[in-house]
Image 1: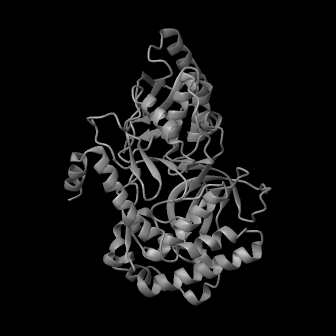
Image 2: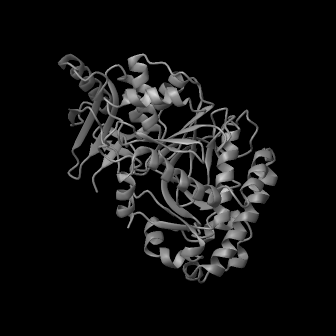
Image 3: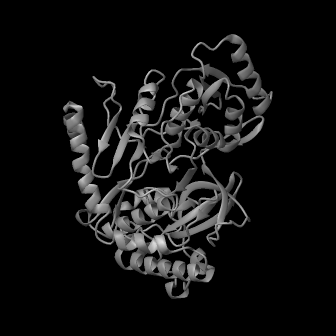
Length: 453
């Protein structure tokens, strides 16, 4: 059915595709931005997170409410917590008495975890890059609350959702693979968004993206950092200046690496601010105007579990009543911090989000994270735009490089290879490939590290 609808959509001329997307925007508006949304938005805009005792009280209250609801309404949780004295769980200090919910358990029991029927819910799908996608059901008011929290965060940077122009680099296939006209964006007039395809960011097309951004003059740029970086890097290499200054660049869904941030902020002349969440409903980690990553403890619980890659997190999401997530092992790794932030928020700070467990490679030279590898990419910025490290089943390593200039010569290739060997260790064996385009996932994301299953 989905393919049929998509086929019909692709058969329409561009202006009717814009109409179709805008009609869908009406559906989104009423499901996400009506009802309790405005009340929640005002609440979150006014809340400053300055009193730790008050924030912990909010956290405890919301945790106990979710736990009670899950046990009463989810057949799975009734059985999962069988034998556990729930009366003894009086605050988040007691959460470790509950078992961990793994990805496999979630996937295998999803129909019994749901607390609401499909017709009463809004549905979302997990990305599936580290496993089989899962359909998550959410209550409408939980979605409205979540959108309000996200929009209050954007307002702290001066951007007002649905009232200011946003350029969104989306993973949705809004443009067919080989369109008749080189128009790689579509409009959602209702939400004041111009959606840019992340599947057509080739060297030949990038100038068209840049020209349209300069025409549109968005007040925010949002979406996958790898796609936004691709545009920014092209502009920098070609010496093209933006004819607008956004309030901010808002990124999500991918790990922001140092070279991403440096290039994007330099080119667009505004802050890049990152936020972590998930379609399953993980609580937010939000980067404040001072650049610190804060665990938003009024949206959930983050448990820090030591691991060889860093610190893994278990999450409990307070707006997951439709598909409760309690002590969910989401598979993400963070780097802890003991710093205090000048913004005044008492929400805990982490140094950075390292990424997924899979976002590490092991070579004879050691274990390298995405963030570490990003420094290698940054050091080669005069030679390569992007790199990708593919670890194959047999342990062999393929390193793909997208050169700054299409006619890269042997001398520059030698410099790239020499730097890689020095970084990874001389004993590391790898195959080096130069390519004009590095492939993305089916969801439009770019991955620095790819591992064969």
